[in-house]
Image (cartoon, rainbow, N blue to C red; front, side, top):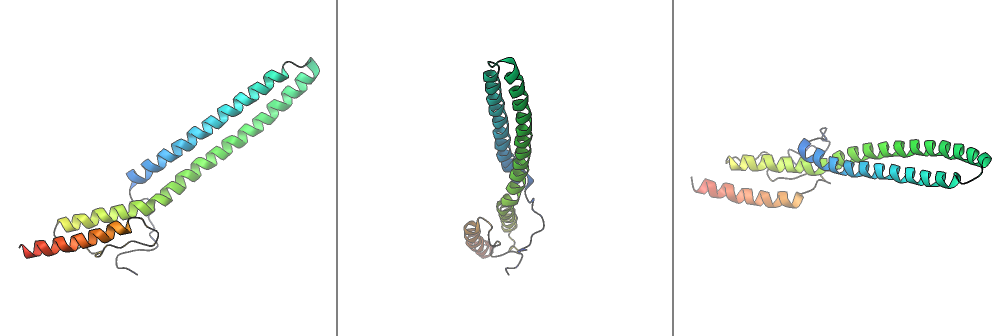
Length: 155
């Protein structure tokens, strides 16, 4: 195991601004989709009811009641599924983005320590398996090593 890396990091939300902003964008898309689905369903139901209204009185009443009952059940399912999708999108987004936000936070802290002329505690900078930006971290580790050596030489 690489020094300074916790493979079972407990904190999922590492950078609220990054994780919530991007996740919120995708949740917004899901919400718009859900609203669109409800509007389309309502338009479809109204179209069917308009066709049924042209029938004679007996069949019209029976069919209208059946259509309205079925549409209410379908709307409940659409709403329930939409709520599930919103919650899933939010949770999945935050969890997936912690694989980006964690490394971004580590890079920020690493660069702040290098800027102060300190050898960072996590040098060379390594991330957990599955985290993004490992190539960037490798490049920054080499750059930091060269910078710190040059800074030491110029003292």
